[in-house]
Length: 314
Image (cartoon, rainbow, N blue to C red; front, side):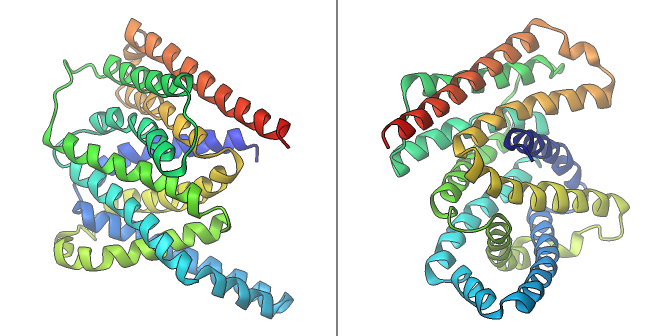
């Protein structure tokens, strides 16, 4: 699949997670929901991994054992424990925030994740961040906020308690994306996603037992299973695997930049679900969309220039 089509699919799935996550608040606590989606995704991936191991066993048993032992080397264990811990913190923070704020508010704050990621990559990985590149990310955040506020239709943006929680969760997500770029290059897309699910489940197990309020989960409600299965299969399993692929094919910066389009898809969904298409035809939405397109162009131009410089220096 073309990397940019993959990037488009990833952004759509991520956008849908905000809406569906808001629905899950009625059926389970934030921690229980996060634990459910990690465990179920891990079970599915273990099944796939066993099939792959069985196939490799018939071809080259020694190679399969070597690859498995390398996957659980001491270095990979602590690296993916950190990667998964950051992601678990984001999910718990997102669900906890949705108890006292709205999907729209979390989408607005999510637009700060790319800029956070650029700053983390600059100071941690030593990546160059030109003024034009930083301006592109700032412009993207501004445009995404304009898009969401223009389609809100419910008066001024009011700061809620949950917004503080999600702001902290966004820092963890930005760190997660950058850490995958730093430590996940030598691991396959499926294997990397599997390690994230495995260590994420280990992180969540004691947390869910102590604070997950598992006895109050609405296991018998159809809405719980429909929303939970969607979050597990499409916005957990698929998005993690796509992210692993995209980090290698287009880089973390382009992934972070593509997240600016998420508010647009959320706005389109809100307009479609409420049949209020007039929310999309106003000055704020149009200006925000122009800012987003310009930001994506500036960020992509900087990435292409960096690749050309690298090729010419060889």
